[in-house]
Length: 60
Image 1 (cartoon, rainbow, N blue to C red):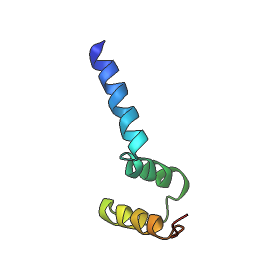
Image 2 (cartoon, helix red, strand yellow):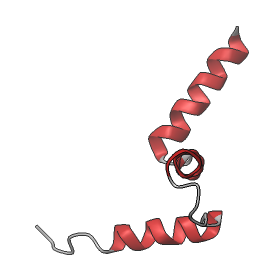
Image 3 (tube, one colour):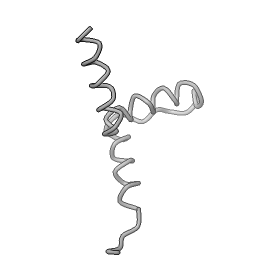
């Protein structure tokens, strides 16, 4: 029972921090875009980092 709670908390924390984003990406690709190539884990995170850096760059 304690093991299940810890596992639930671990999954929640991974989801909250975005650490499970690659797994969600793979699941989505498998369902919706089966004929397109899949990014490697490293390329996926570099792509997400690039998207974040494109955001609004202002002080206020």
